Length: 196
Length: 175
Image 1 (spheres, rainbow over the protein chains, first blue to last red):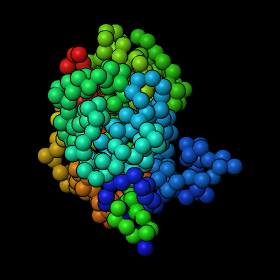
Image 2 (image 1 turned 60 degrees about the horizontal axis):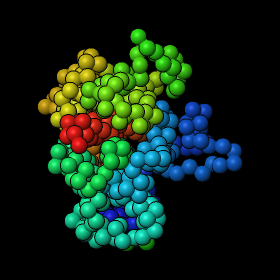
Image 3 (image 1 turned 90 degrees about the horizontal axis):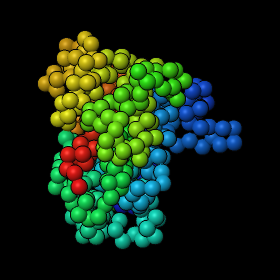
């Protein structure tokens, strides 16, 4: 039996939609194009098939996601992941948090920061720079946003350049978006029944 | 006036990209100055954001949610987040639905009670959205595709509000 996962970790769960995803065999031409389905590659996740219900949004969101998280310059990829994790902790999007925690660990070749966050949440002891980044991401992700001059000052004190701060705003904001799809339209589940 | 070709549909549109970009206009970032130089570092992202805004606010395929209703919902979400100037921009496009931009209205008169309850919760209480939030809409006869459309609109607004807030902080709290 698959159970809903409620605890933050870097073990990526499965995602079970709360709505019926588009069936690939019934997809329109526009949906197939947005899904990037080709005769040799027909593997599409339930999440993407769910978003295919709104094909105009799906088409523009994927390139925007990739640009914000992966474009060269500015903030490092692993620090952008902290922005994603901060937003996902606030919105309790377990699936997004796990995916981006795993990615942070992979990019850093270390699970230390993520394990501390899993164990202690926002109160985890972090290096100064990561602390300022996480605090800003968390404050910006509250609704209404709580980020103010104090958090902005802390980022600059921690040595972040303006281009890096811009990337942090964008990566955190992107997960205000992603969390509201992933966490709202489905559940993170695991078939081994564990609640971790 | 400048014009540009919209890469999503190839049509020629009036106005420079920045003039058409709600987020930058709301923050007051124009075509020149230090803030403009800063966002120019990621101009591709701001251009794609403008396309995303059109996809959720003014899509060709609207499903159950007309353009004016989408604008009203966007204004409502901006108001719930205390970003009044963004709300004013969207409310101007809300037509007969403009009353819904006020978070005090519950949408009952328009037959949109469950929709507004869902949208409000997703906007400002995301962490507590659980499965019944979606099934309530399904029980109210709203198709899954229209639930996804509502979620995309809500999610985009959350992104836009975060970017507006962050850019404002950057420009007001100068290094």
